[in-house]
Each structure stands twice: as structure tokens, then as C-alpha cells.
Image 1 (cartoon, one colour):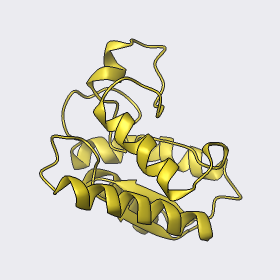
Image 2: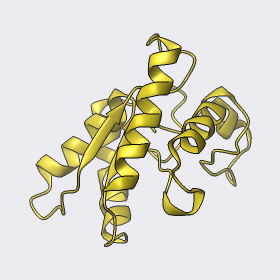
Image 3: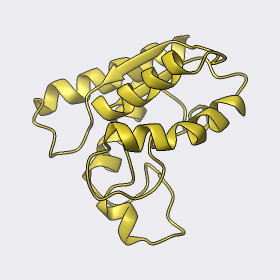
Length: 139
């Protein structure tokens, strides 16, 4: 994902990124995850910028968040794949892999962000999310 959305931000400082959060993006992700067959206990949901922005992340935001991503990925030695949702998430992951010489590179699949604000056709967004999650689960 990109950064905490409005529904998560409204929950305050104790909020977490979860498929159970209120809002259409979390619901769309949960539907796609269930349809893909990916178990709830085998994935970690993470925002490429893990703090509230209230806007789309910029390259500066992605660079500021890179140390948090590095720390997260270093703590996941058994990570087999990353599925990004949205261009900022994909850009942030790729900037990390191509700017960090010691990065342990894993396969990355990209799907459109599931927010209703994303103009990509709804059916296509859902299909791509399901397929990306399904492929990742097989790696």
C-alpha cells in the first residue's frame, strides 16, 4: 500500500494497517485476498510510507521512508515475494532495491491501488489484485 488512508488516520496514533479497517480500500483488499486463497496468517500488510500524509507520497516521502522499509525487510529473512498496490508503493520498493547495494532482492508483483479514487476499471483492479496475491502465494 502507499500510506495510511483517511479511515486509518481518523483512528489516531494507535491505528494499524489492517484489512479489517473501515473503508472501501481495506474491504477491497480483504475480498481480493480471500478470493486469491492467500491465508491471513502468511502475509504482512505494510504502507511504503508508514506514517500519515493525507496525500499521495512524493519521491522525497519515499526516500524518507526507505530506512523503515530496510528495517522491515531485514527482519523478514523468509520473505518470498512483495505485492505492491499503487505506483508509489512500487516506486518505493524499486528505489529501495536499486539504491541499496546490500538489499536482498525478492520477486515483486505490482497491482493497481484498490482505492475507489483510482480510475483503473474496478473489475480489472480486483482481478489484478487477486492474481498478484495468488502468484505471490505460490512463490
